[in-house]
Image 1 (cartoon, rainbow, N blue to C red):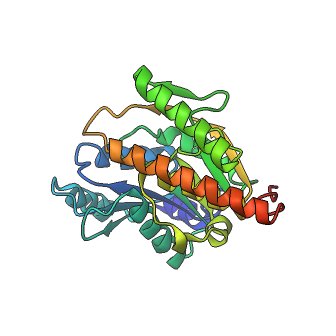
Image 2 (cartoon, rainbow, N blue to C red):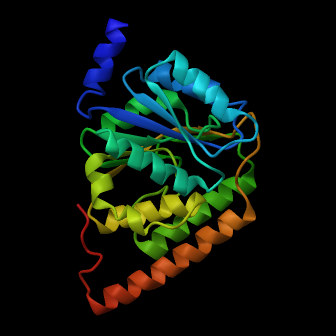
Image 3 (tube, one colour):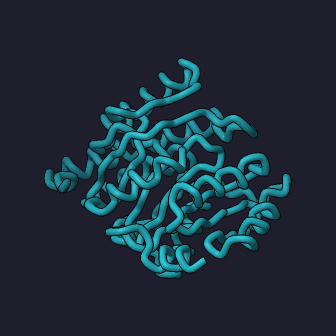
Length: 262
């Protein structure tokens, strides 16, 4: 126990205290497995399961994990409000408790906890780290061609429409240093799903946040049902188009409006 306590105090070298936020809704088949893998891959980090009152008992399973491990916590939310709202609640929880960095991670195992140390290492020299599926060295496993094409096309469209210089603006495996969360106007965020990740990429870019991408291995979930839907894709397309038009109008009025990028 002494070793664990020392690691918890120190946190990740060069980064500090880290909280991994894992939103859940009906992830009873996955939550134990993913939390265990995180704790094994990165023993110095804490975990927050943000559960949207899952009817399948996910929250109760998370409570059991928290009762057995002081580095696991549970945030019980009143109902299903979406991925973006869960992450914003997790960010607020972390900031209130003085964490130095917050990690976004899916509950379904598509984001390999074994990649987390590399993302945290990159955060020593950046304020925001994206675990990228589309940068050199990354791998995507078990995705049908349709999903591959949809993701690549969506990210290309986001990059062209918004001018955000990353290859995976929709990727949801990320590290935010406290400085990045302070720089981003989180109160203005309204989107969910893929659009939520794109919106935070856009806001970080506009705020001049130091951003890097690290290749990851991304795998399709093995248990439970995907939360992807045509509505989520439509929301992302509509919001990206709206933001792009708004940013272009701003740039036309003030040419240096989007020029800042470290």
